[in-house]
Image 1 (cartoon, helix red, strand yellow):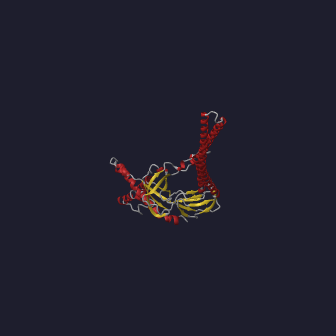
Image 2 (cartoon, one colour):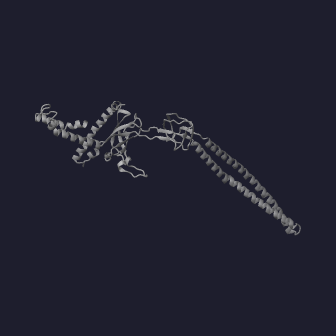
Image 3 (cartoon, one colour):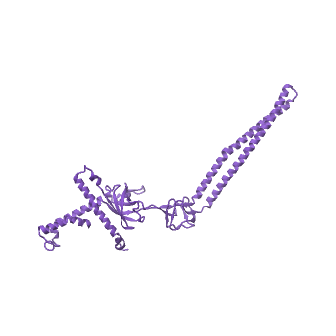
Amino acid sequence: MLELMLCSLFTLVPDYLYRRYAQGKRLGKEITLFSVWFELRWGIIGCLMLTIGLITMIFYFHPSTTSAALFFRTVPIIPETPGRVAEVNVGFSAPVTKGTVLFRLENSKQQAEVETARRRVAEVDAQLVAAKVDVVKAEAQLQQANSDYKQAKDELEVKSELQRRNPGIVPQRDIEKLQVLVDGRQAAIDAATATRQSMETQVSTLLPAAKASAEAVLAQAEVELEKTFVRAGVDGRVEQFFLKPGDFVSQVMRPAGLLIPAGAGQTALQAGFGQIEAQVLKPGMVAEATCVSLPWTIIPMVITSVQDYIAAGQFRGGEQLIDASAAKPGTILTILEPIAKDGLEGVTAGSTCIVNAYTSNHEVISKKDTPAATRMALHAIDTVGLVHAMLLRIQALLLPIKTLVLSGH
């Protein structure tokens, strides 16, 4: 209607003025309800054609959509291990911070495994202490074996020297017995040395490795125990949290609930524009939005991203062939962010909105090599965006009335 009234000022009104003052035709006389088409046909046809062209230009170069919303992602509350709920620490609706324990699963088995692993670490520590004592004992045994060997060897050398100086003074049988004793004492030294090395290997290698393995088992058991404590991964708020002690939760069968991150739906607005406007929508375009949850308010925004793919065209390989005629038209998804830092403050997350985007040709117009005709056309394109801005403000003004009165609720 606004476009029609505007176009009539340049077509229908001049035609009427010409008929009235140039031809002397008056309303109600020569120009009646039955003759108005014949008398003002040029103005009416021109008005309709100009209106259609103006509307087409406005909606193409300054696209608008009602398919816009502050979408936000929720975080599912899912335990890493299935189990039965033993304790719930938050209510139906409550703010939480990162790391807050939301609920605890039954964990008697995990606690027993942790205690067993701790006892195993303590057992290895005790074995390490005992092994160190055995090392000291082996050192003492080695010193004793060395002393016995030295004593037997000295006695063998003395008697061997006497036998050399005075043959027959020492029985040969005694010398042989001493030689056997010395060999036995040498074997005792070797055995004590091997025992000491074995004890040192246990202290330096075997038992530390066993302790490290026991500590790894303990760490794994503590991790499994920690999995029974389900915590909030981010700051936010739990809503509609109906979990009760005794409920069984798992990753597949039943999640525990949902966590809404702090600031969800307050950073960007997602809008779907028609496919015909794909060549017009560009990152950096200025836009305006009005949302149902914040009536009578125009939010200045800017397009930060335009999705290169239309969601309606995606498919997954399966057992059936795709029929292109069954695909929905789909929209061009754009991401808009408020120009002001707190531009979306007061808008409820998930609220639906009306969005207008405006084409700006200022850079092309300001170039010196741009032809004059092109400049005039681009000026006209930028100027008619004012009409769309007025329409958005009218929509924002009438939105509460349309929602509360005319919707029939």
